[in-house]
Length: 253
Ligand code: MF3
Ligand code: CO
Image (cartoon, rainbow, N blue to C red; front, side):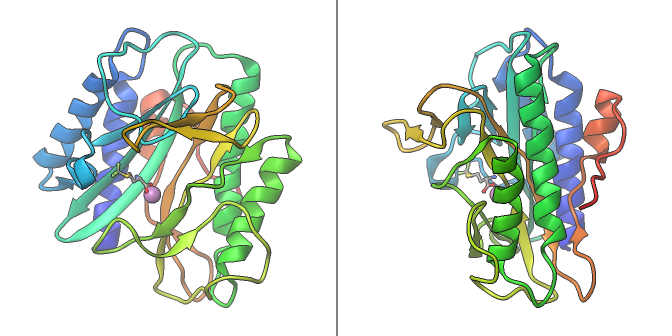
């Protein structure tokens, strides 16, 4: 059931990927995602969640998480994260991908690359018998080694019948601490990494979160399941990368 929900959210982001380009509004991306989920028998979990107004969280440039879809038209040089949760037959899949809109600044491009790689570093640490802190530390170490900073206030999470379940999965922390990982646990790992300082500001409505220094922030997310051996990544960027015409997502530890 989790694999099916994860496949749906992955294919949804694959549809969104076909539309990301200069001039397209983020509301348009949101409509594409909502219609695709509904057409495939799913439910857009974020829409209406504590009043959230979109199917996608839209994260343009300095927006870290929880941005609203709007009539803002993407511009060449922007980055845009699209974070999506789809529910299918009572189970949830959660994934996020940050896209480059046309040509972007090489420093921002490197931030995207390292943030995506850090997600796979975190996943590689997600093995039965280890702890949440091992995942957190793997992400943090990799990103800070490249000179980036890790957002503290937001984290990944357990996932299943609800989109947010225990345990919390931070992107910073110490090895060997936190909840024990066991086969069958489903978690969403989602590094939120800033080019500048780690500090963020949250808008008055309590939702939209941006970097304090207004430098860019990147965000990638997969839903995975802990197994007896290697973690299984149940969401995939394959559909996105096919749509963008770029090669495989797989970055091994
Ligand atoms: N997809 C987000 C996450 O990764 C959740 C979105 S919060 C919502 O946890 F309110 F927008 F739904
Ligand atoms: Co999530």
